[in-house]
Structure formats: structure tokens, C-alpha cells
Length: 201
Image 1: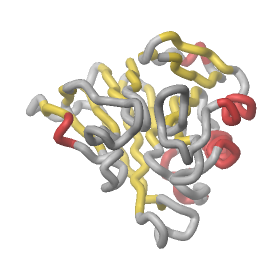
Image 2 (image 1 turned 30 degrees about the vertical axis):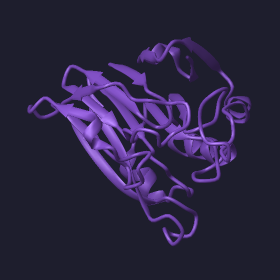
Image 3 (image 1 turned 135 degrees about the vertical axis):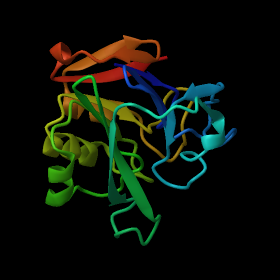
Image 4 (image 1 turned 45 degrees about the vertical axis):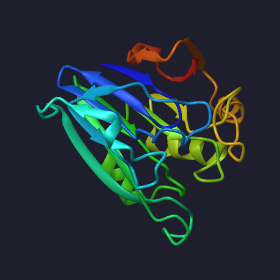
């Protein structure tokens, strides 16, 4: 299984069962990032904001994704959605691996959500704060899920991301076991665990 990051919260997952794009963003919606044309079996958007829901960026193959998909309702803020609405957490399982994309989660997980997600091999979690959980809250989520491999997303870096969200470094200091990946793709290997994978474009 391979994961390719396209910036912000957008990932392409490729596995034996096919391919899935998570949270494609609209042109001009995220400073410093532009999506190339994408093609996949499925596109999944965690919520309706334009920096997470531009499904038109993805050409669908017309064939269903062959892996398993589970979605769990959550909130985009810490006020039960009163500020920014709902958010979908998505678990994709294929090749014996379980990958969870947290979307724009803005709150702690409940025991019921943790139980529903079960084992997490790879966790894609926002860490920049302001619109989502911050670094400390993201690490609490990773610990609650006992994620083997954690990949931070939705943060600000040199030349990209919203000014109001934080950089990735506070999360990396909390998480430890950092493995830097040159480029934008990572082939999932559980022998790396425990690890925090950070892309260096």
C-alpha cells in the first residue's frame, strides 16, 4: 500500500483493491498548493468546505474500490459542530492494513468512536490547530487509537498553508520517532512502527 500526499489534507491511497483520494481541495483554496489531475476508484471528502471537498479534481475509473471502507461521524470543532459543523473520519482497510483519515477533526474522540475504529495501522491526522485539533490534541488522538504509524497533515510550512494554523514541529516534538521522507510518497511498512512520518517536499 502506498500513500501520496498532495498537501493540506489530500492523500492518494493506492492498494491491491484500487485507489482512493481523500479531501481534494479547490483551485486557489489552499495557499502554496495546487492539485494535479487525479484519477482514482473513489474520492472521499470529510466535510463540505472547499479546501476538502473538490471532488471534481478526481476522475473516477468507474470501477468500485475493492477494499473495505468505514466512516465514523465526528465534529469539526469542540462544540459538537456548532461552530463548523460535522466531520467524517474514514477508515480504509486493504492488504491487511488499516488506514484512518481524520479529516478536519476538531475534538477529542469518544470511547465509542475509538471502539468503532479499532486497530489503526496508519493515522492521518491534522495538527495545525485553529480550524482543527492542535498538536497536543492530535497526539492525544494518536495515543487513544494506539496508531502504529502517524502522518501529520493540515499544517503550515515554508511557502504553504494558512497563516493561522501552526507548523508541524510542535507535533513532531511530542510524537518522537520521526522519520523524514524525501518527496511526497510513502510505502506503508509496519516494520517502521512506531514512527511519525513527515514529508519534506
